[in-house]
Length: 465
Ligand code: PFF
Image (cartoon, rainbow, N blue to C red; front, side, top):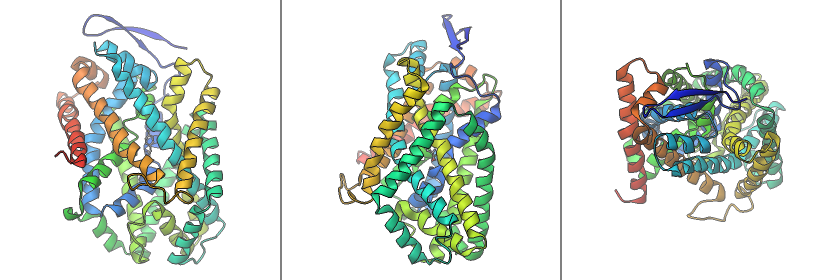
């Protein structure tokens, strides 16, 4: 049921504000868990460590943290704000809010950009989540007991060389995702409440293990002492892109979740909690993995296989390793699951709203498309590993295009829209910030700092500045 509330905006034009057709989060905490569920995922535990390894460590981490604070947090607030004000799928929200602000309807393309980015990301995200599922089975059945670093690496090599296995796991994960999206996210949201804290506890446990058994000092040095000679314009782009990716920004996922947010909830403090939780998980993952990397003579720059080549060594040697290891990969699968549903939600919400489809049909259509696309990623680790475009495999290309270009571009448009197109009164009313200073800092970051930073990084990479 859609409830309409009349409200006056500053032009004295009556503006109809809707409660989302899909309902609302029951409490602020429900939203925090859902949004943190979307943010915390493979990006934190699988991607952050390996891109940090590939980009030289400390300086990269520092740039990433700066991007989270100066670009990510202000844009996340803006994206939630847009969602709550529009209360529809991102495409329709942008269309209506542009109209409300007297701007051109082209802003709805921002919604489209997000839908496409969501498809592309989920297509490879699902393949990697499939790896985590396969590793759940392997670790818990004791495959790695007593394994050496070489043994673990060769098991990983054999695994990704087998397209049929990867395809089977990818298919299973896609089915799991679509089932949850089709039947509503309530069940998973309830589960995430317990699973996320459990994941945090397990990560802490791994950090303690890595402190005792790994080369913790070298890992700390690698992660936190900044050597700027290792930084290139490409690595700055990767750090910025990852800030968007890890916070699920720039593609409408957080906007859709914002559209179910009750009116009275404060967007500012809620955003800070989500960003802090997300950053903490990424840093803990780094602290768990790098001590093992250095203690076992592995290369920090081993790429997407890094966690699959390091953590099993730890699980293979600790007491009850197969129990803890199995649990860890299981929780990683859940973290990926709660992120993947938010990747497809903007598309499904739009199909339901505009094409009058049932949720089930919308899921089957978008799920099948994503699954097909995922086959490209499956093959890029084996049969087509040598096929390169711009020196990148299919997986690398998708990852680069989405995380480094589409999400920052989406984020840039969000910042420009809320900062420059939407009226101050509207953004102020939606944020409900009690302190004018806090609003002033936010709008300054959003209007000037975030867009300029994104533009500079883009121009720098193309070589214009
Ligand atoms: N934030 C998720 C992660 O770090 O794994 C990935 C993601 C989810 C990106 C949803 C974008 C998104 F819209």
